[in-house]
Image 1 (cartoon, rainbow, N blue to C red):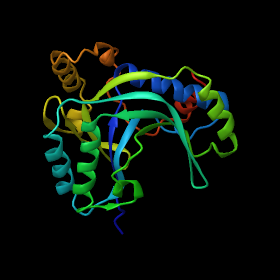
Image 2: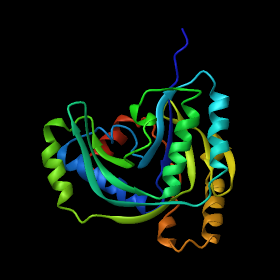
Image 3: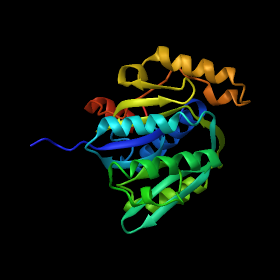
Image 4: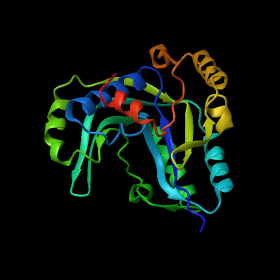
Length: 240
């Protein structure tokens, strides 16, 4: 029997925001011995839609690309900390302050994709959406208060960022990315290509957004949320 694939639409942080978020994720993982985020490669991101299943992958990808074509510079900011705390869902996260464009993009994805896919998330059906990027979840129930207090003791971030690509994941791996800067759909090979990433960055720089710090340290260009070897996981957990 053929297994059903899980898909997810997300945006992946880059530059300083990515460096900051990953550092915080591993700091919390090491200090409190939690592995909900670090059990696989930690890829700081914002979920835009999903998870979901579909019987028409081609149409789904085409829909994401056609919506992406209507957007170019989509700003937002990473602005402070917050959490979800209920019996079914305990998550500590970075707060995202979305621009009108980001809210429009997310809702447009939702309205169009819900017509052709089977969503697993109630949030996909709601226009009001809590944009966030997870710091810790899953195995934090007994440590939630301590982690929350620790996070509150830190200086709150205020980091400007733009969406550069919309990433489509299939079973946790990049399937396609729509590049808002190059204005084209990238297949898996192109999406993971350093050459294409550098083109994205160069074109973004030429737009003169005024946030040059946003794209520093881009040699660490695209990392997938893939399983690591036992020793790599162990080293990551202890911050080596």
